[in-house]
Image 1: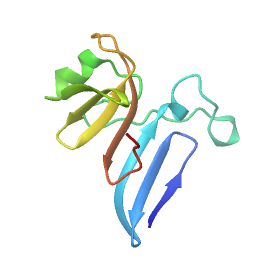
Image 2 (image 1 turned 135 degrees about the horizontal axis):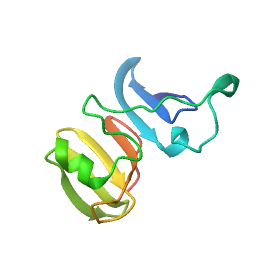
Image 3 (image 1 turned 30 degrees about the horizontal axis):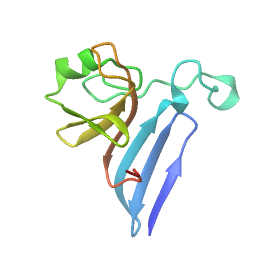
Image 4 (image 1 turned 135 degrees about the vertical axis):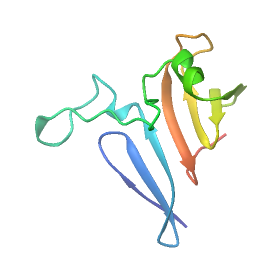
Length: 107
């Protein structure tokens, strides 16, 4: 069975048989979302290339050679093992979800 740990900044880590297997990030920790513990804002989590929740499609394509397609999840992208969802199709569409490795994504 897939096990997971979630934090209030939108990060979820997944494990299989007690070993790290993947991660996901959603809008929970985005600006304007509920604050983190003790009233402090949640830090913005990004890839080393600076892509995170709220990044635009244009920013994504500036740093990754992403394949973008319409799926049952919406406007979905994959870039070298990094996957996610955009809230639209234009250059200003924003990343709403990110994940990599084993995770729970229902199509």
